[in-house]
Image (cartoon, rainbow, N blue to C red; front, side, top):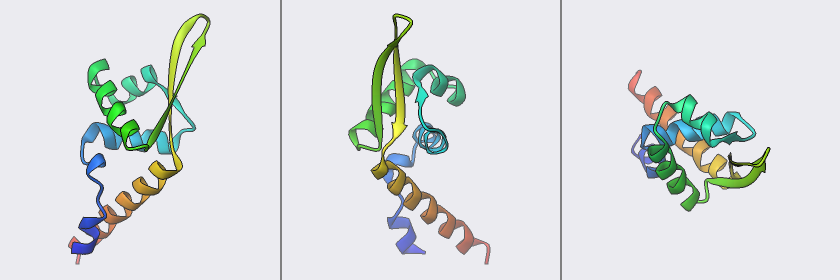
Length: 100
């Protein structure tokens, strides 16, 4: 069990970051406003957590214009998907170990 604790990634300990990674793992990509609405967070809160995940190279940012309006989209990277999967597996092991 202790080995599984070491596989938990600190970047995913926060509720908002866990939510971001969860929805991006299930979606091809999402824009800022969709993430904000899904996670029910403020602009500043979301932006800071997105920046932290981007710094870890767990998400990618794509900026474009849609009908002359700026549009920022986010998607999970291969590294982000692998690390998030490891994190979820470690959580699952931890939970199962407590059910015995």
